[in-house]
Length: 123
Image (cartoon, rainbow, N blue to C red; front, side):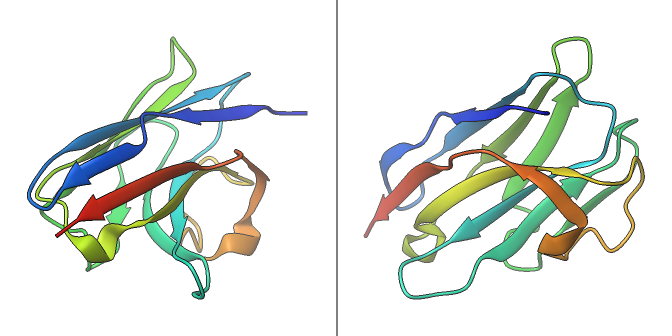
């Protein structure tokens, strides 16, 4: 059993920044962030392999968001800059079933999820 707890969400104006954190009970796998806006399906945001060497970003966040991880702390971070109103969503941290990035944009490749943290970007 792996427990994931996200934190760092909140309300920010467009153009602002937030840093999300995900604390895991243990982490020897690739990790990902997904988000779900009201009335929309959950969508992939970014994934990072266990070594932190390979990263995949969704085109919608590339150049604005940065994922990182600290395996000594079993933590994954998502730095979000230049936020837009369309970034408003509940953000979820998830543990992949793989150590590497295999089909990492697909939600069914993740077996444990956090409870989510709300990010609201006002215009």
